[in-house]
Amino acid sequence: MAEYKGVMIFCEAVGGKLAASAAELLGGGRKLADDLGQELSAVLVGSGISGLAKEAITFGADKVYLVDDPLLKDYQTDSYVSVMEKVVKQAMPQILLMGQTAIGRDLAPRLAFRLNTAASLGCLELAIDPQSKLMLQTKPVYGGNAQAVFVCSAFPQIATVRAKAMTPLEPDSSRKGETVTIDAGLDLSAVRTKVVEKVPEKVEGIRLEDAKVVVSGGRGIGSAEGFGQLEALASLLKGAVGATRPPCDNEWVPAGAQIGLTGKIITPDLYIAVALSGSSQHMSGCSGSKTIVAINKDAEANIFREARFGVVGDWKKVMPAFTSKLKELLAG
Amino acid sequence: MNMIVCIKQVIDPEAPPASFKIDPSANKVVPPPGVSPVVDPYAEYAVEAALKIKDAVGGKVTAISLGANQMRDIVKKPLAMGADELILLEDEAFDGGDSYSTAYALAMTIKKIGDYDIVFCGREASDWNAGQVGSGVAELLGLPSITLVKKIEIADGKAKVERVTDDGYEVVEVSLPALITVSNEIGEPRYPTIKGIMAAKKKEAVVWKPGDIGVEPSQVGAGGRRTKLLKLFQPVREGKCEIIEGESPEEAAVNLAAKLREAKVL
Image 1 (cartoon, rainbow over the protein chains, first blue to last red):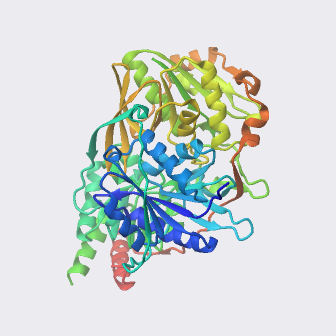
Image 2 (image 1 turned 30 degrees about the horizontal axis):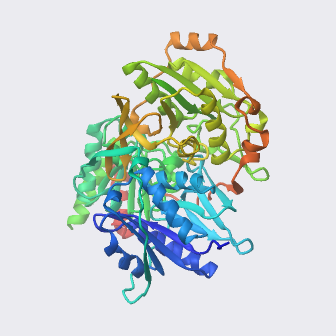
Image 3 (image 1 turned 60 degrees about the horizontal axis):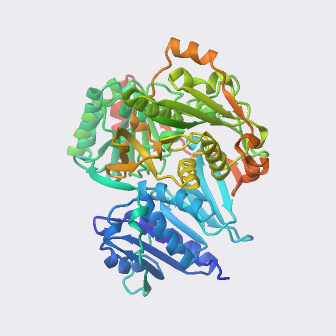
C-alpha cells in the first residue's frame, strides 16, 4: 500500500491571482514539509487557473496539482469535495492545509468526513511533534478565551489556518517545480447546488484588511452618527473603520466592518479601540496589531490589558480633542 | 416543511473574561460559579432560521440537543421560542465527544426521525468553535450542505439561500432535503414569549440513549473521537498599558495624541 507523504496546500485564487491566504499557507507549509523532510505540494482547483502554477512554485511549492475545468468556476461543495477526494487519493499527502476562508471552512470538514479523517478549523499555529511526527494543531476555542492543541492520527491531517497566522516566503522566480494535471471527472448530476448570483460587498475607501490604521468602535458608541466621528479620525489617518459585533448587529456600521472571531482578522500598525471592552472574541481579530490604543470610560475594561496606550474617559469628550490635536500635529 | 435544528447547552460565552478558568490537569473548562449555562448563541440563530421558515410557509420544528447534565429550563428555550418538539440525546456515553462523534450521533438521530426537509445547525458552537458538525452530519446522511447562510427562501421544493463569502455574499439554490448552517447575519433570534415559555414548561422533552438511535455507547462521545485534545490553555497577555492622564478628558486626549507622535506610532 502506498504511503501518505508530504504537505499539501489547497490554494485559492482571487481575481486571477494567488490569494494572500495561499501564499501564507505555502510559507507555513514549507516549514512543516522541511521539518518532516518531505515535499510541499500545491493544489489549484478552478477554471482558467493553470497560469497560477508557476506562482505557487515561486512561493515555495515543489509540485503543483492542477484541476482546471470550466465546471469548477464557482466553488460548490459537491464538486470541490469530489475533486479534492480524487486529488488526495492520488497524491496521498500526510497533511492538507487550507485557508480559514468561506471556501476552506466549507470544504475542509466535509472532505475530512468523506476521507474518514478529521480536521481542525481556524488554527493559529501548526508544528510537527518531534516524537510522533504528527501535526500539532493549535486553535482558539471558547471564543478566544482559551487555546487548544489537537492531534489526529488519521491521514491526511487536515487543518484550516487563520489569515495572517503564517508568513509567506519572498517569491523566488528561480525556484523549479513540477506540474501535474488531474482531470476533474465531474459527474454533474451529483452537484446539488447552483450558484445564482455573487454579490460583492461595497467598500468605500481602504479595505479593513489593507489599512495601516484602524479606528474601531464598540457598543458604547451608541449610534451610526457616533461612528461618524470614528470615520473622521480614520479618514484623517488614511485608515479604515472597524467595529465589534453589537454595532454591526444594530446596523450602525455594515456587517463587513466586524472584527473578531466571527468577523475579519486584521493586523494594522495602529488599532485605536474606542468604547469597546475588548472581549476575547473581538481581540481574536485584532490582537496581531502592532500598537493598540484604548479609549474607554471603564478603567477595568479588558481592553486596557491588551493596549499599549490608553485614556480612561468618555469617548464623546476624548475623541474630538484627540482628533483635532492629531490634525494639528500631522499638519505641522 | 419539516425542520430539524441541532442545538447544545454551553457555558455562557458572555460571562466576564475574568471568570474564565481552566482545569489544566483535566484539560477542561471550569464552569464559572453562579453563571447559568445557556443555549449556544450560534444554535439560537439556527433556531431563528427555522422559525422564520415556519412563519413563512408553515411546518414543524424539532430541536435536538446532545450532552450530559442538560438543564431542562435551558435546553427548552427553542420550544419557548416556537419549536414544536425537543429530543435530548442524554447519556454519559455522549460526553466528551469531538466533531466526528457528535456528528455521528446527530446523523443517526436524524435518520431515526426520518421525515425532514431541512436540517439546521449553527455555523459553529461557542465552546469549541469547531465549525464542522453541520458539514459532517450532511456528509454522513448524504445531504447537500450549504454553510454560513444568512437568508433563506423556500420556493418550488427548493431553498434559495444567501451564503456569506469573504467579500460579500452569494445566492445559491439547493434541492431539498438539505443541511444548512446558519451565520449570525440571519438576524437577532426572537425572545420567547410568555405564552411560549408556559407551553414549553408543559412539554416533555423526549430523551434518547445510544441504544435508541441504534449505536453502541463506544461509537459516540469520547469513545468515538477521531481527534485527541493534547492541551487546553489560556494565552498569556503580556501587554502593559500606559495610561495617559490629564486634568480633563480633553487634556488626556491631547496628551495621548502627543504621546503617539512622540512614540512615532503616528
